[in-house]
Length: 99
Image (cartoon, rainbow, N blue to C red; front, side):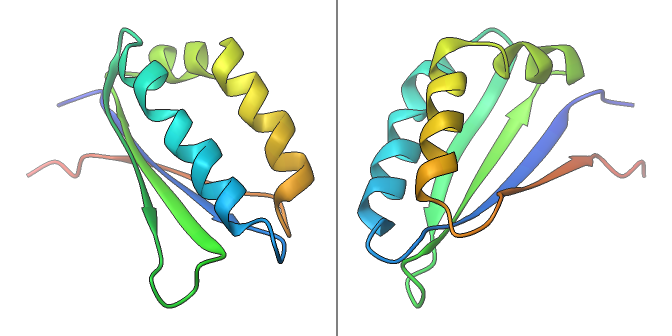
């Protein structure tokens, strides 16, 4: 059984902050993928609702994800999100379903 975690984080930008949300989440790709334990990190935009975005992440284990939350690029984006989101972001932690 795998210990990997898939994370789906959902975001809704305040009116007028849609591009800033897109830019901030895109800026997270490179440093996150460089982290040990990050297996995937990809933001997606809703084409029908530009204020909505999600990030789908895959982490080797919970320890790698917990470490991610302590790093400067994450603490920076968390502070920016406080300013630009219409509501707190959602975070779903998913694990593999055993066969």
